[in-house]
Image (tube, rainbow over all chains, first blue to last red; front, top):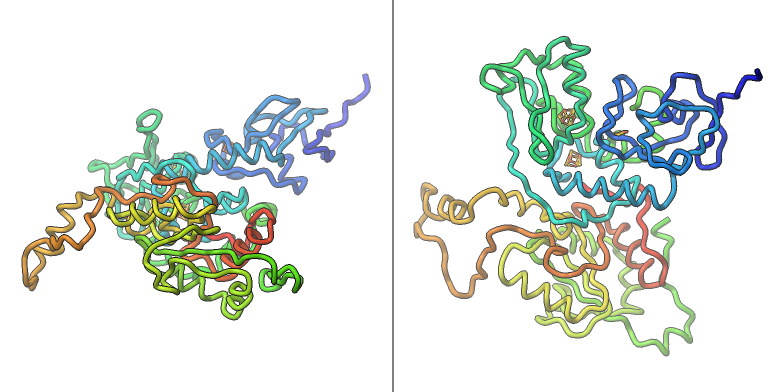
Length: 238
Length: 194
Ligand code: SF4
Ligand code: SF4
Ligand code: FES
């Protein structure tokens, strides 16, 4: 039997992959940007944000969870798929509380950077203006629940890297939210330390280290000059 | 790149065409977007070659007449904002929302999860040193709405220019694209939410 070449095409471009890679891993390794928000190369894909949705042989699939297979014909950077991504972003913006001018993460935030990438000029939908609260009880870390996008990266990082289980997702649908594992439910009472992986992994401005918010000024931040489609392909960037 | 964008028209063309009318207003905004608009600097001379201003803080005209372009800064937080916004929609062929407050409520919307009466009582009545100890209720003062709304929740908006405020270059790029009939687009350096 002849070997089948480990290649697939993305938007017509042929790329090689290693067996076992997901479509997302193969794309990023080959220097092809695919929008993603809940995927972090260091963690098991969660597949929740659906921003990475591509079509594989015509069917919509999450690129971060589907295995790369020989001969797949993948469409990703098309007006239709980018239009759907923009709608997903707009829904994330209106259901949470994203006032970027007042957010320490601005310029370093992947949600915002994808908004720029997908040319999201307006939130389109009516804002929920939720009151999800802030927990600032920890001496070195705060969490603004209004900015959480439920990507579960802090849950994974705390459990799998820090070995602490400080965070969990609770509730269903619109009521789902991050909860803190401590007697009072407050961060200050939890085992979280400022050096924990869970603190650094948040892709948005929900979990923030205190007192370093403006150490790097606005205008000199990760996505201030280069878009996420460029930054995501540089070594050391997710 | 944006600085190079120009509105120059052939001289013959200029003579024939009636000028565009542009109206601008600030609803519940800080006038930062208008200030940023003035950051187009000397390019405003190119603009007035082909456009004239209707209602705007620049002209001090109080009511908006028929216009080609309306530019709105600020969200909707009181009854007067609603009237002004509707007047603009009724008179402007194209309505543009500029800045975070017009687009998502911005800073004023931070009160949306608080009770208005509670806010007013705390500011005007409970504060130590307050003289009158009553909430101002002069009939001239517009009534506050219970919630602050982005303007697209009140009327249809044709275009959005995000930023807090958008830079003069972003406003210029958007306007010149629109006026010269190109699809208005902001490239990465000009598109900002902060
Ligand atoms: S988390 Fe990101 S999108 Fe949300 S307010 Fe902060 S910078 Fe903006
Ligand atoms: S707090 Fe941050 S890392 Fe945790 S689920 Fe929310 S967005 Fe994700
Ligand atoms: S990145 Fe694939 S679902 Fe979020």
